[in-house]
Length: 173
Image (cartoon, rainbow, N blue to C red; front, side, top):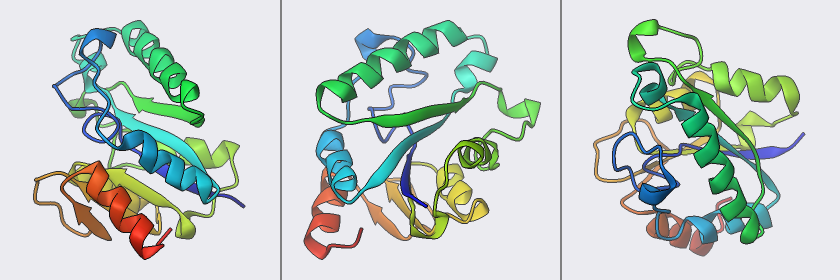
Protein backbone atom coordinates (compact mmCIF):
# COMPACT_ATOMS: atom_id res chain seq x y z
CA UNK A 1 0.00 0.00 0.00
CA UNK A 2 1.16 3.48 -0.91
CA UNK A 3 0.68 6.90 0.66
CA UNK A 4 -0.82 9.54 -1.63
CA UNK A 5 -1.13 13.28 -1.92
CA UNK A 6 -4.37 14.40 -3.55
CA UNK A 7 -4.24 17.94 -4.93
CA UNK A 8 -6.89 20.33 -6.10
CA UNK A 9 -5.79 22.23 -9.22
CA UNK A 10 -7.16 25.79 -9.34
CA UNK A 11 -6.09 27.64 -6.21
CA UNK A 12 -3.51 25.02 -5.16
CA UNK A 13 -1.37 24.05 -8.15
CA UNK A 14 -2.11 27.25 -10.03
CA UNK A 15 -3.45 30.70 -9.29
CA UNK A 16 -7.23 30.59 -9.63
CA UNK A 17 -8.04 33.22 -12.24
CA UNK A 18 -11.51 31.68 -12.71
CA UNK A 19 -12.15 28.87 -15.19
CA UNK A 20 -8.51 28.53 -16.23
CA UNK A 21 -8.46 26.71 -19.57
CA UNK A 22 -5.56 28.19 -21.55
CA UNK A 23 -1.81 27.81 -21.15
CA UNK A 24 -1.37 31.59 -21.47
CA UNK A 25 -3.28 32.25 -18.25
CA UNK A 26 -2.04 29.22 -16.26
CA UNK A 27 0.27 30.44 -13.51
CA UNK A 28 1.84 27.95 -11.08
CA UNK A 29 1.50 28.91 -7.43
CA UNK A 30 4.73 29.97 -5.80
CA UNK A 31 6.25 27.06 -3.90
CA UNK A 32 4.19 24.28 -5.51
CA UNK A 33 7.20 22.55 -7.08
CA UNK A 34 9.17 22.43 -3.82
CA UNK A 35 6.08 21.26 -1.88
CA UNK A 36 5.50 18.39 -4.29
CA UNK A 37 9.18 17.42 -4.19
CA UNK A 38 8.91 17.25 -0.39
CA UNK A 39 6.05 14.75 -0.67
CA UNK A 40 7.92 12.78 -3.36
CA UNK A 41 10.96 12.64 -1.07
CA UNK A 42 8.70 10.99 1.52
CA UNK A 43 7.45 8.43 -1.06
CA UNK A 44 3.98 9.78 -1.79
CA UNK A 45 2.19 9.20 -5.09
CA UNK A 46 0.70 12.40 -6.46
CA UNK A 47 -2.83 12.73 -7.85
CA UNK A 48 -4.80 15.74 -9.02
CA UNK A 49 -8.54 15.77 -8.29
CA UNK A 50 -10.29 18.78 -9.78
CA UNK A 51 -13.83 19.97 -10.40
CA UNK A 52 -13.97 21.46 -13.91
CA UNK A 53 -17.53 22.75 -14.16
CA UNK A 54 -16.38 25.14 -16.90
CA UNK A 55 -16.68 22.15 -19.24
CA UNK A 56 -20.27 21.41 -18.20
CA UNK A 57 -21.15 25.09 -18.34
CA UNK A 58 -19.76 25.40 -21.87
CA UNK A 59 -16.99 27.91 -20.97
CA UNK A 60 -14.35 25.63 -22.51
CA UNK A 61 -14.21 22.17 -24.04
CA UNK A 62 -12.95 18.91 -22.59
CA UNK A 63 -10.24 19.02 -25.28
CA UNK A 64 -9.15 22.45 -23.96
CA UNK A 65 -8.89 20.97 -20.47
CA UNK A 66 -6.96 17.90 -21.67
CA UNK A 67 -4.54 20.04 -23.69
CA UNK A 68 -3.83 22.25 -20.68
CA UNK A 69 -3.46 19.20 -18.42
CA UNK A 70 -0.96 17.62 -20.81
CA UNK A 71 1.09 20.83 -20.86
CA UNK A 72 0.94 21.08 -17.04
CA UNK A 73 2.11 17.46 -16.63
CA UNK A 74 5.05 18.16 -18.98
CA UNK A 75 6.00 21.18 -16.87
CA UNK A 76 6.00 18.95 -13.79
CA UNK A 77 8.10 16.30 -15.58
CA UNK A 78 10.70 18.95 -16.49
CA UNK A 79 11.12 19.42 -12.73
CA UNK A 80 11.26 15.67 -11.96
CA UNK A 81 7.73 15.65 -10.54
CA UNK A 82 5.51 12.77 -11.64
CA UNK A 83 1.77 13.13 -11.28
CA UNK A 84 0.26 9.63 -11.35
CA UNK A 85 -3.07 10.82 -12.74
CA UNK A 86 -5.35 13.80 -13.21
CA UNK A 87 -8.95 13.00 -12.32
CA UNK A 88 -11.60 15.58 -13.10
CA UNK A 89 -15.31 16.17 -12.92
CA UNK A 90 -16.56 17.87 -16.09
CA UNK A 91 -20.11 18.34 -14.80
CA UNK A 92 -21.96 21.48 -13.79
CA UNK A 93 -23.07 21.44 -10.11
CA UNK A 94 -26.75 21.04 -10.97
CA UNK A 95 -26.01 17.69 -12.66
CA UNK A 96 -25.57 16.15 -9.18
CA UNK A 97 -23.00 13.59 -10.33
CA UNK A 98 -21.00 11.26 -8.07
CA UNK A 99 -17.63 12.61 -9.20
CA UNK A 100 -18.02 16.28 -8.22
CA UNK A 101 -16.27 17.14 -4.96
CA UNK A 102 -17.21 16.66 -2.16
CA UNK A 103 -18.55 13.36 -3.56
CA UNK A 104 -15.92 10.62 -3.68
CA UNK A 105 -16.13 9.48 -7.32
CA UNK A 106 -12.65 10.70 -8.30
CA UNK A 107 -11.06 9.08 -5.25
CA UNK A 108 -13.03 5.87 -5.88
CA UNK A 109 -11.65 5.77 -9.44
CA UNK A 110 -8.09 6.18 -8.15
CA UNK A 111 -8.60 3.45 -5.53
CA UNK A 112 -9.85 1.06 -8.21
CA UNK A 113 -6.46 1.38 -9.94
CA UNK A 114 -4.01 1.94 -7.06
CA UNK A 115 -3.50 0.52 -3.56
CA UNK A 116 -3.56 3.65 -1.42
CA UNK A 117 -3.41 3.90 2.38
CA UNK A 118 -5.97 6.66 2.81
CA UNK A 119 -5.38 7.05 6.54
CA UNK A 120 -1.71 7.95 5.84
CA UNK A 121 -2.54 10.18 2.87
CA UNK A 122 -3.11 13.91 2.47
CA UNK A 123 -5.40 16.18 0.49
CA UNK A 124 -4.61 19.84 -0.23
CA UNK A 125 -7.41 22.15 -1.34
CA UNK A 126 -8.59 25.73 -1.23
CA UNK A 127 -12.36 25.24 -0.88
CA UNK A 128 -14.68 23.64 1.64
CA UNK A 129 -15.64 20.99 -0.94
CA UNK A 130 -11.99 19.84 -1.05
CA UNK A 131 -11.77 19.38 2.72
CA UNK A 132 -15.21 17.76 2.76
CA UNK A 133 -13.96 15.31 0.11
CA UNK A 134 -11.06 14.37 2.41
CA UNK A 135 -13.56 13.58 5.19
CA UNK A 136 -16.02 11.78 2.90
CA UNK A 137 -13.26 9.60 1.42
CA UNK A 138 -11.59 9.05 4.83
CA UNK A 139 -8.30 10.62 3.75
CA UNK A 140 -6.29 10.94 6.96
CA UNK A 141 -5.05 14.52 6.68
CA UNK A 142 -6.14 17.67 4.91
CA UNK A 143 -4.65 21.09 4.32
CA UNK A 144 -6.65 24.18 3.46
CA UNK A 145 -4.80 26.85 1.49
CA UNK A 146 -5.78 30.51 1.22
CA UNK A 147 -7.77 33.20 2.98
CA UNK A 148 -11.21 31.49 2.91
CA UNK A 149 -12.82 30.31 6.11
CA UNK A 150 -12.65 26.50 5.76
CA UNK A 151 -13.76 24.12 8.50
CA UNK A 152 -12.38 20.74 9.58
CA UNK A 153 -8.98 20.75 7.86
CA UNK A 154 -6.03 19.25 9.72
CA UNK A 155 -3.99 22.38 8.94
CA UNK A 156 -4.65 25.76 7.34
CA UNK A 157 -2.07 27.97 5.63
CA UNK A 158 -2.35 31.20 3.67
CA UNK A 159 0.16 30.09 1.02
CA UNK A 160 1.73 26.98 -0.46
CA UNK A 161 5.14 28.26 0.64
CA UNK A 162 3.96 28.61 4.26
CA UNK A 163 2.57 25.06 4.09
CA UNK A 164 5.81 23.58 2.77
CA UNK A 165 7.91 25.42 5.35
CA UNK A 166 5.73 24.18 8.22
CA UNK A 167 5.63 20.54 7.03
CA UNK A 168 9.38 20.49 6.50
CA UNK A 169 10.21 22.15 9.82
CA UNK A 170 7.92 19.91 11.86
CA UNK A 171 8.58 16.73 9.86
CA UNK A 172 4.89 15.90 9.79
CA UNK A 173 4.59 13.95 6.54
